[in-house]
Amino acid sequence: MAKYIEIAQQLITMIEAGEYRPWGVLEGELYLTRLFSASRVTIRKALVLLKDKGYIHSRQGSGYYVNPPEFYKEQHLATLSDRYAHVNLSSTVLEFDTVDPTDELKVQFRLFDGQQLYHYRRIRLVDDVPVALEETWMPIHLFQNFCEADLYGSVMKYIEDHHYMISHDFKKIQAVQLHGETARHLRKEEHSLSLQIIHKVYLLKSVLAQYTIETLSDNQLNALSIR
Amino acid sequence: MAKYIEIAQQLITMIEAGEYRPWGVLEGELYLTRLFSASRVTIRKALVLLKDKGYIHSRQGSGYYVNPPEFYKEQHLATLSDRYAHVNLSSTVLEFDTVDPTDELKVQFRLFDGQQLYHYRRIRLVDDVPVALEETWMPIHLFQNFCEADLYGSVMKYIEDHHYMISHDFKKIQAVQLHGETARHLRKEEHSLSLQIIHKVYLLKSVLAQYTIETLSDNQLNALSIR
DNA sequence: TGACATTTGTCCGTATGTATA
DNA sequence: CTATACATACGGACAAATGTC
Image 1 (cartoon, protein in one colour):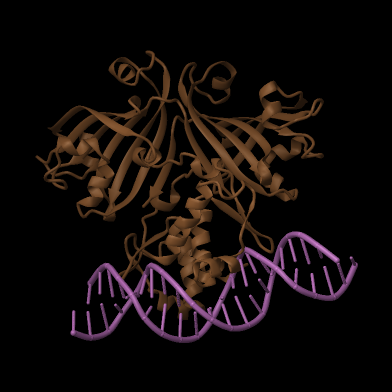
Image 2 (cartoon, rainbow over the protein chains, first blue to last red; image 1 turned 45 degrees about the vertical axis):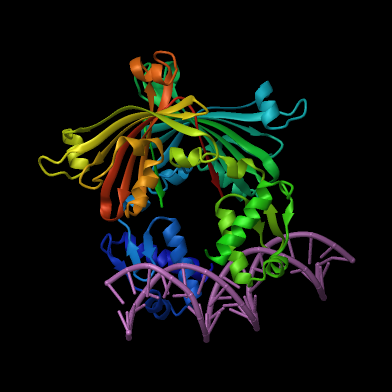
């Protein structure tokens, strides 16, 4: 692993352990070069990483300042696995099969006649409390040996473990009203309001690898933008 | 302005003008050092900027590749002024007054007894079509000469022009149902679903400068995450 | 399969500019 | 005014991944 990433991780560990007061000053660049036996360039690359992740901010001529925890603990709009990386995330699979594409999905995935899709629905639980319901389609020709057992972990990780490079994830967020089976699975009242995130996960060269409709049980999603 | 930022802006201008095919290759670092008479480090800093903004991606041993427009044209979760920076954004002010804080706002703004808040509601329009309704509170003691005329531009810019440093903006997104006056102002049907973004804009040292409830007319918000 | 050139990624040392205290 | 500390910039070197022959 690159040196600047290691340094960044060590600093993050120290900050999360509470070794620096929120709004307190971090040691200057010169001190850190001696502490980690690294050049100033390397230290600065590590500090840029910390800044991007929200751990610190800096003022020219003054120094680096440690941000309070809410800066880096916030849920950015990451995948569910990332959002709940630190907790006990499990899954209940409701359905797993192969289907013919609808007209819209056929266009989205750029399928030829006869090509089919995996289709599954699963409930995602944190400490056995349902937090989201996912309905996903993935093209069979990209993932030959995909099976139900893979649904109990992170599917994003499955994709990356099978020699594909994930390029980006388009998300469309919209308000929905829960009803019927969906409401029951998420343990919410009929007609209650909630959020839905439609993910389109792309590989390089605009190849769509996954289409997911994620319905949240909480009508709330947090984001943070840092100037 | 810094050299690497100027270089980045020139490259962005060229990409947006369509001088590079989507997925096409950008000239290598060595070529760019000669083109801009800059060192490799400076070129790389510019390219990191472009990468962060979604204009390009790179592969070690291969080169830099230009992304398709949807990568950088997407609406990230910026402020309304930023989201619509390129279009004709105007405002209609519905209300502007000073009010006593509710208990919740008194805590949020950490107010003493007797301290009051500015309060305003305005409709934001793009080409005279309403896109959002904003209801905002700001503490009077931070902004002495704030007046209705300032509501026709960007209030974020007003804050930064008055010697305050905006630190960050917490956003909570939730689903809502439009009704009554709100629905009429946004030209939507009674009970139609939409999104609400609650902004908390902070200055340095956790000073809350603005509390805004932004109700969108479109039940849609796009985001993009790049790996 | 292996050798090779190309290109990005990482790292170092040094110098100068600029805002802050 | 001065010292400190971050911001910008340059040049050089080697590592690692890629593409090609």
